[in-house]
Image (cartoon, rainbow, N blue to C red; front, side, top):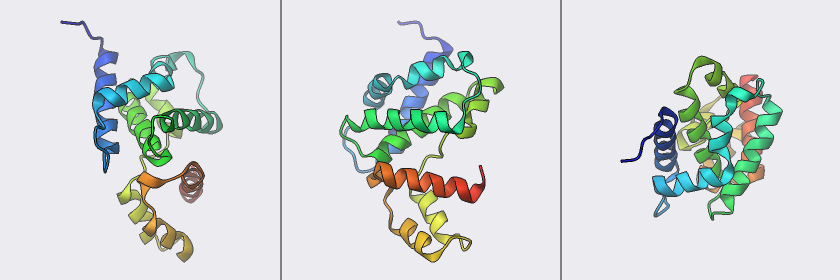
Length: 160
């Protein structure tokens, strides 16, 4: 039996969580496949070496997030699905870490799904056109531009 570190256990859990979160409508979205994809992006190494980073800025995180999602898109999934994998993986890894590392979660995007989009569609403080768009948006089909605009809209509403 192979020896696993605590980090390895967290990684396997985070890959499982990301696979389950992103599997809607996709055959074969396995933990093993997501783990391989996470390895391709360098995301696992990024999380493993967070202690070496000074606090991450929103701009730095957004640039890195785009890169990770673009790499995942090369595996034949939509940008929206890639963003969900990244968000769930990072949230699972960082929220199970010590407080110093978990503080990096501040700039991590929320996992976008139907529940988030429907809640935004019901927000009376948003313009009708935005609410209507959120109501008809499918997170699994989000393009990079649509996703980026959605995150910017959420951040501006929450004043992050």
